[in-house]
Length: 68
Image (tube, rainbow, N blue to C red):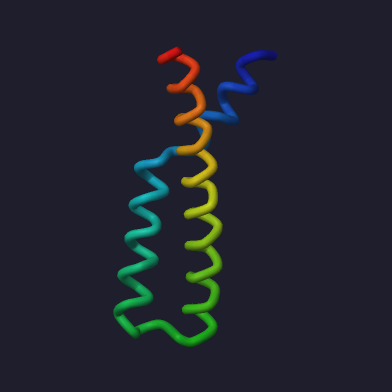
């Protein structure tokens, strides 16, 4: 049952998320997407950025524990 926890943790990949944010950024900057697509991409980007931030805060906390 502990493997389920690990699987959920492993679902988030910082590098993949950052690449997705870069792709979204490039699409938004290109000006080649409609207004509605831009809004949807922006919302998706915000969600990804929030997940990245949560992940980094979690890792920072883990590193503080290790360093103590």
